[in-house]
Amino acid sequence: REMWRQAQRLWESNMFARAWCAFQQLVIDAEEQKLYAWRCYRWSLLVMSFAAWKRHYRRAMAVIGATRCARVRIATWLSYRLAFRCLLRALRLMAEVCCAEAAEAQRCLERGRLRRSAAAWRSVARQALFE
Figure 1 (cartoon, rainbow, N blue to C red):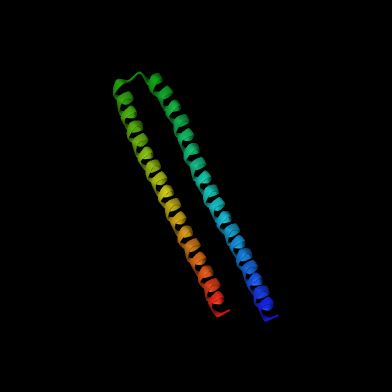
Figure 2 (figure 1 turned 30 degrees about the horizontal axis):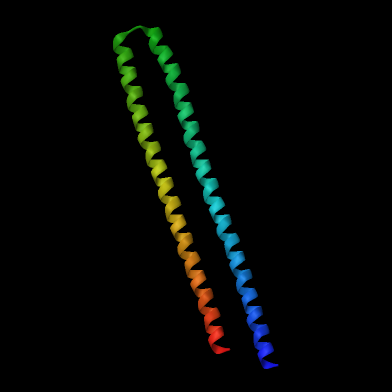
């Protein structure tokens, strides 16, 4: 009879551990989806800023063609080129920061998952030792 109660308790603790692990997995999945949504948001901002720059560049090129002044055209072209390089540099840095943040968040999630898993196994093993 006592062994039956111990088996019942062990089964209950296993069920609680499984439920806890499933809940933790849901939390982890939600965080991963949040990270993915943030990455998509950052990517859409990047694409929209590039499209705005493209429209601006086309209008500026039309103005340059209309002026037919070589010095103004060369100066404008160089300024747009510099602005484009600065924008690309900024966008590359944003992309690197986004990737670094995502990688750090994934590492943090993995560390948390491992820590929680180890704690759960420790508690189950401790309970198993005492029973």
